[in-house]
Image 1 (cartoon, helix red, strand yellow):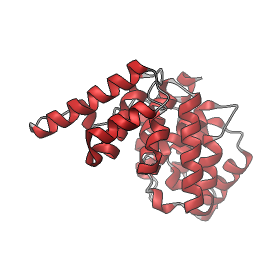
Image 2: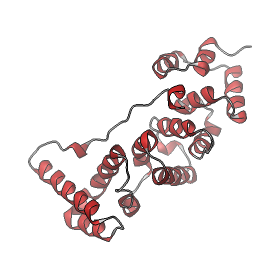
Image 3: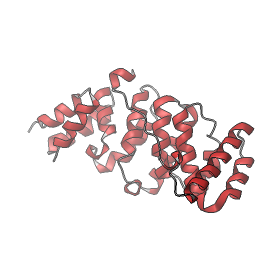
Image 4: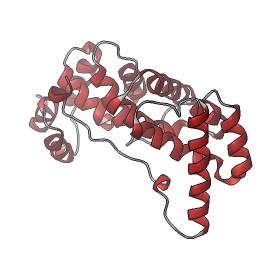
Length: 222
């Protein structure tokens, strides 16, 4: 039994648009397919195939899915694996992971936001929202001076939703107790209050929605 032609095409695809189309054709994996996927992820030395699997982690056997995504998030040599894992997480229900895995994913994403920029932090600021609780608000406040505009926007979007019911006074208090520069705190408070005013007036605020940055192909990223 050989691996299916569709899986072979999927593992070799270099264009993300084409990859999505090929993924739609992968209805069911045979035993050889699953064995091949396990082998690729165990060896971890085929950048295109590993990246494609991390981008579409439903193809990864469930028993190793969480560990592979965590390995991708912690990758040091090939940062595209980090991006692929971040994007892959956006299509997965966090409750499919164990509590320990969810905590590790959250901590890895926080570390990524603290140490990365560009597309990685921009997409990371989207993925992390599913793993945060209101208890993480102070940690996210400390990231509001991130150099990437999209990352800052998405972090503030999450903070506004997390703090909305607690009201303006609570938001102001937490902002002022954060270690952020005064201009960053002032801007965050103003945008939070603007969001509340627009909501009360029945208007839509730009902070009602996250921003999704464009994902490059592996060859373009490198």
